[in-house]
Structures are given as structure tokens and as C-alpha cells.
Length: 281
Length: 322
Image (tube, rainbow over all chains, first blue to last red; front, top):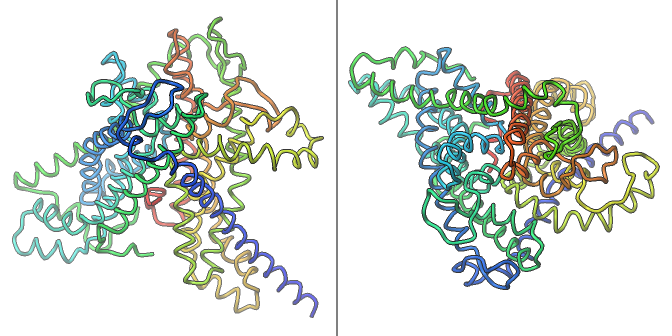
């Protein structure tokens, strides 16, 4: 039957089209990773890790200041953001049936979709402006605000997955309610919560926009969190848009290091913490 | 919001003794941080944008001059540029993302599912600034040598492909955006398609439909709201994306129909000019752009969530990017 043949042909063609789409989606990833390695590896050597940037246009120099700065600012963000996000998530899971919880949940999703540049403006308004100068601390606050909604939602999901029979058993044994929540529900969900936290850390480690006018960047090695500080992402931005060949070379090296850092957090999230519940899909 | 099965914890855990009350109070305070942050963001934006709102009124949105010397500001080129670059990104990303989602849920052999899904989601893990770097040094030269010449030869008579191509352009920004939002659209659509009951496609197949006909006539119609939600979510990402766009779009305050010409977006304008704004009015104008951007993304995201919630569970979409 010719109609039958045509229908089969259409089905074949469309199946092939979806295969093509999958291939086309993976190609940019391979290209980007390939270029990162090809162009980045040559700049990564010992000097690259231990030196701070050379004077503009001069050869040599490294990103030691940016690596340390990234770790400090991301650390500040995690220090401020994780307790809040985890706490709010536990609240939503344990008491999350009232109207206030509905609002918190909705706000978490709204904040999750807020452009990171707007979060940068927020940190500038409430940190940089009152303090009168740019600082790593303000950058950390911006990153914390980016983390909180992500961590809140994953924590809620993880605590909710804890079987009721476990918490009920604890209550039946005479545990007080807060000890049941903290000692049974949260503790059982902990690996999952940590996975969510590490994913959030991986995401903020690569952020640039919220740091542009908070941490600002710094060409020197600085550890004072009340002063401007460099991060890998800021350094890549400055070097990539700058005029010098040497800078472009360093930008690729810094990008490779940043990508590796993000992937390490991501892989840690996936493998190191053994989640006790499968994700149900 | 998945409803809790069985007895609600809210009643079983609301405490009577001191420890329980302290615990609940502390958690409530932490949860309160989120609405407080939203109010602080909105309040800060409104307060700082006020001089500009008062001076320019609604005209701010429609004027295309941006002159820090004469202190006249209008956001039309940025608003239009944001919309055009995002739509261009959707135009490229949506068919690809849907193709990926359909492939992964309907056609892929089992062993290929996980690796392909992970690879596509890995796109979401690449930092924006790295996309920008790659765009500047790889994508733009590629466009210049291999894409734009044939494009102009074929479609040069259209106003969208007029003028000299220098590299930094709406086209470059749109393409990089499409790569960046693809993982979000495909992973949400995939979740939506997975939520379609198997009976739906089995019924179509039993009636003699080919595999594609089952997808097209039974699966996609069932999940269409969720898929629209996924696309709107991708749009929300594209609208607010900053670094890669700033590095590729050319940052010019002009409106041009040609995709080969430089443009500007709201996020890029803030990123570029915020630290250098000298007068109070300049800063206020940038704050007003931030306010518009915030308003638009909140609306778009809220719409997307409502659409996706109808079909798939209300999970925190995008937070599982890795």
C-alpha cells in the first residue's frame, strides 16, 4: 500500500531527525571542551598556578590570585547560603502546608529564575553602597543569594523523600519532634542534601555577572575579604575582552582551570555522596 | 508541590515543648530570608531607579537615545535587543531541544539514554563567561569564514542579513544563547514527556499508528502545555543571560533589523556601564533597566512554572543541571 509506505517513511525520517538533533546538541559540548583543552593546556604550568598577573602586555604571569579569590568568595557564598537554604528547605518539608510555605516556595522559584546580574545589583545596593567600596564579602553575599533558592528546593525534595515510617517510629519511641526531624529525617536525607549543595556550589563557582560590581576583580594577590578580589571568572572576562595575545592565552588557561573546578564539584555531587534514594525517575 | 501522602507532618510536628518551638522558630526565620530577599531586591531596584522613573516616565521604554552627556536615557534598543536575541535563540534551540527530548524518551536505545542525557545536561554546567570566551575566539571566526558568506549569498536580499559583518553581532549572541538554553528546554521537556502515561502511546500504536504518528498525535498533544512551559523557561534564561551576550553582541545602542549588526541587551548594558556610571541619573537609568529586566523575567518564569506544574511534578527545575 503506497499510503502505508509513505507513513513508514515519514516515521523513519522523523526518527532520523531526532537522532540528528541529539548529535547536533552534543557537538557544541565536544567543540567547547576540545577547544578548552587544546588552547588551555599550553598555558597551564607551574608559574600559572603560583604567580599573580604580570603587568599588562608583559609575558608570563598567572592566576594564583584568581584561584585563591574564587575559593574564598565561593566559600563565603556557601558559608552564608548553605545554612539558610538547608534550613528553609527543612522548614518547607516539615511544616510546608500553610500559606506562608506556599509563598516561600513560590519566591524560591522566582529567585531561581532571577538573572544573576540583578542579584549583583542587589548586593551592590545593600553591601557595596553602604560600605563605600567594593569587596569580596559583597561578592560572597551575591553568590549566597544565588545559592539559597536552589538549595532550599533540593533540600525540601530530599527531606520529603524520607519515609514516614522512619519518623513515626522515632516519635513512637518517645523522641521529641525536633530530634526526630533533625536526627532522623534530616540525617537520613543528608547525602541528598549535600548533593544539592555541591551542585549549587558548582553553579556559583562559574558566576561572573554578580561579581562585576561587588568583588570587582583585583590584579594583585589579596586575602582581605573587605577589599576587591579577583576570581577566575572575572579574570577570564577581562583577559578575553582585552587587547593582548598573552592575555588571551591566559584566559584559555583560566577557563580550563575554572571548568575543571566546576566539574570537580559536579562529579563530587554525583558520586562522592552516595544518595540513599534513587530519584524516582 | 507534590501533596504529602498519609498524615501531614505539619500537624504531627507542630511542637508543644520548648525544644520543638525553638526548632520551628529558627527554621521559620531561615525560611523568611527568601521573601525578605525578594522584597530587598525589589525595594532596592525601585528606590534607586526612582529618579529615572520620575524624570523620563513611560517614555524611557520607547526612546532610543542613550546619552550620558546630555543625560537623556531611553531603553528601547536594549529591550528590543533582549527580545530579538532571545527569540533568535529560541528559534534555534527549540527544535533541537524537542528533538533531543523526543529521541531520549521515545526512540533511543536504552543504553544510549543516560550518556546522551548527561552530555546534553553538561552544557548547563559550562560557565557563561566560558561560553563568551569560546564565542569570541572560536564561534565568531567560524561564522565569519564559513557561515555568514553562504548565508548572505542565499538570503542577502533580506533586511535581516544586511550590512558588513564584523563579528560581534546579534547573530553571534543568538547562537551562543541557543546553545546555553538548549539543556534547560530539553531536560524539562523530557520530564514532561516521561510524565505522559504509557497507555497514551500504546493506544496509538495499537490502532496502527507508526512510532512517529504515536508521538505526534498522542504523546505531544498530551504534554503540550508542559512543553510550552519548558520553552518559556528557556526564554526566561535567555532574557537574563549576561556574560556571554555582553562579550558577543557588540554593545551598541542602536536598533538594526540586520542580525549581522551589533546590538545590546538589558543585562549587557548593566554589566558594561554600571561600574562606570558617573551621574546619579545614569545610575538610576541602569537601575530602571534592571527593574524592567527583573519584572520581565519574574513574569516569564512564573508563567513557565504554572505551565510545567500542570504536567510534571513541581520539582526545582534546572537545579539538577549537573
